[in-house]
Image (tube, rainbow, N blue to C red):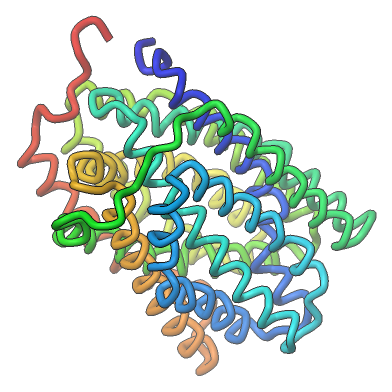
Length: 389
């Protein structure tokens, strides 16, 4: 398999898979722990939206840092700051200084980590194997996701939040190790057209993805937890079943894009993802249906994410500056997420059910379908793997 030949990408993917062990462990309990700590669902959503709003405002800081220290050092810094989130999360007890500190620390760590993560992957990856390399990460995430949520749920139920979340923070720190053997890409302080190259359909794509996440990630996590009786173990077990389903799908689907079936994968991926949105909306209050909807979620992600991120990473690599490109992309994601979370919080506060609030994600998913279909029709051979691959 030629897409495994890039040793640097393999190291980077190993970093992200270890990072995902915490992200899908303690990180999967972030939203529900806000509710568990005493915040109402609308206030929890507002807190999550506030993180994205702060991210949007401080995002230029990452360029200042990266232009001085390089892209790898920025990613390592973001990883270490992410580890700090978890001990703070363990101390949440409703609205107060600890919550405000969590919002700020999460925003800063996210800005440093995700902008540099996407820029690094765009820079190191191969265009002809883009879908496959994305799918390797998704499959790896799915594999660690089988164990991580069950372990985190058990640690929360048995030893309490401090032990469980500190353990997740330690896993994040360990994910730094593979990055030490990757190159440190320099970022120039001034580049003509670095930000302007990101304007266009890919920016709309990322904004709509952020809007989708409000329902499919934040609201769904809270809905699943409440539907399964507010049990950490039940919630973690449902996520583990979902990760197992994702592992089955992960490796094959991105390769399908690289074989030149991008347009077909758009219809399959976005169509399946829309079906998952509807199923999750119907699953609220029905435990077995919620488990099924949870299990189908990663399969939809494995179909949808490689299709969505392939044009983003390809255009980023071709742009004058991959980091500036992804700073704009992440700013678009933040914008969509803030709109989605705040709108959902307002509607839920006025009496809208969690299930119906999730249906708002269909707006973003259908928009992404239109944008992606247009992209792959315009670039039918751009993502074909070479014959020897």
